[in-house]
Length: 224
Image 1 (cartoon, rainbow, N blue to C red):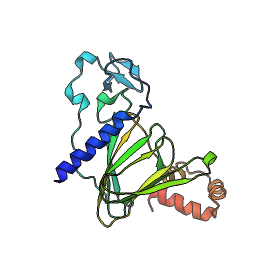
Image 2: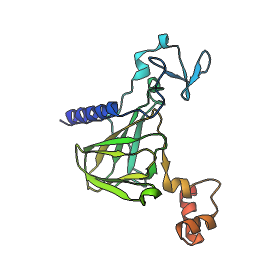
Image 3: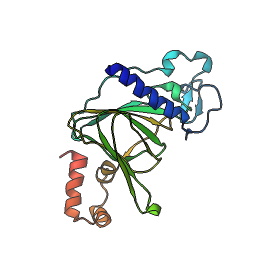
């Protein structure tokens, strides 16, 4: 039964991704498989391309997204990627995916994807999700509780999050409008930057005592 639910959820996410307009530049050839060795390659869209005549099924294939990720960490979540790094055939195609596992009350903390819009479908559990609009729209929080089978969209570049508000594990799949959407986790970026950002600057920006900022930096940089 769970296998059927998994396949249905993945199919829904794949369909949603196919209907989305890709953010990456449209490919100029039928396929452009990523290759790490630049020999005899052409630099296109961030990756070298192998000769299309040498493409094989494995270039477009990835297994293992049916397996749960390890959520035994301080935030209680795990992301399993399916982007151009794992599937070379995604190069120039403007799409990718992830599986996200959440421990009970685990969270995918506030973050942003600089190169992609994200569409998320819940396969198991109950998530509280949301994004915050830009300064021009008064930093408005747009959030909703999602249950199994629900879908939510996070616009490109906006800070967003997901929290498992249930006492059981949760699973979601997400599709992106980029072969490599990138991720910027807000707390890690601000307080975990190295060399550290001047605590006085951050103290003023966040209206915090610089001593508190230093304590946060110690936690994020050194893991204390």
